[in-house]
Amino acid sequence: MKSSGYVMRAKKIDALEALTDLRKGMSNAEIMGKYNLSYVGLKSLYRQLQEVMVDLQVPEFPAVTKQKQVSAREVLKDIQAGYSPDFLREKYKLSSSGLKSLYMQLEKAGLINNHSGRQLRVNELAEDIRKGMLEPDLMERYNLTLVELKWVLNSLIISKFLEPEEIAFLEFARPQSDDNPLQTRFPVERFEICEVDNPKLTGEVQYLRGNQICVEGMFTRKGETKSVFLRCASLRSRQLSFDVKCEWVISGMLANFRIVHIAPAVMRDLIRFTAALTKVFCEENDEFLTEGFDYFDITDVTELNPQ
Picture 1 (cartoon, rainbow, N blue to C red):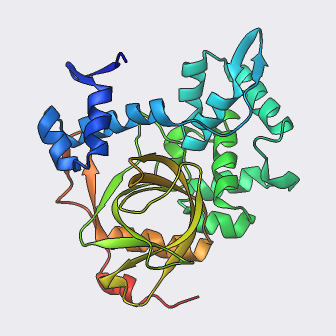
Picture 2 (picture 1 turned 180 degrees about the vertical axis):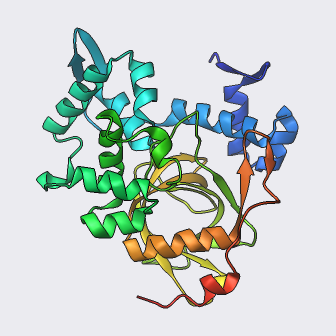
């Protein structure tokens, strides 16, 4: 079988060989050493391997926009991944009106929904975002789930109610953008993700990025949904529980999960938790931020009052 290659920073890496190495159980550090990759290069490799392996489970049908045929499956994959409207317009060569039309067709087909037909105070919501209101507060005030909030933010940007830079401070719900990537946060101490129904089934969190969590050691399948909670020494008996869906998996043991349901109160605690117990990787400089990052005091996390 002929293998494909990917060009990354003037390096050509054989995708089949890289997958074989991962299936053999090579660690991130070993992969980076073998192929002479930085963390950014490793992330790019995983992303491109993901594009080969992921198959979104939705019907394949063409969405027509002004004489263009666009794969609904591919568009949904990009929307669920959180890509920004600018990215979607560029990728599918659509005008602003064409992208609006595409969203309407997907909503009409029932593949995405606009907060279940509820009336939303758009101007007020946009103003709250401009004031710096975070996702859990927005979810509580406007009675939105995380998925619905992501959809609303995308719609507000497409409709020009908001500019992308006005929601750049949001990490859980804002669309992913190459110009303003989500922060990658790495644990400063070991913490695990555990299944609620069987806490003995655990995995170790490798990093968090927005509403994405990369986990090593937890067996799962692509598309599987789990109720999980985070556990680490600093949290003591406090459990932060939410529902996740497996976006991609390599060798059954390295997986990326997307948070699909989380209570606002839990998200609020999770934001404080990640601020206190993770360090941020700066992709632009290819290094960790060691200065100028305002960590919360650990007691802010360990003394959270259960809801």
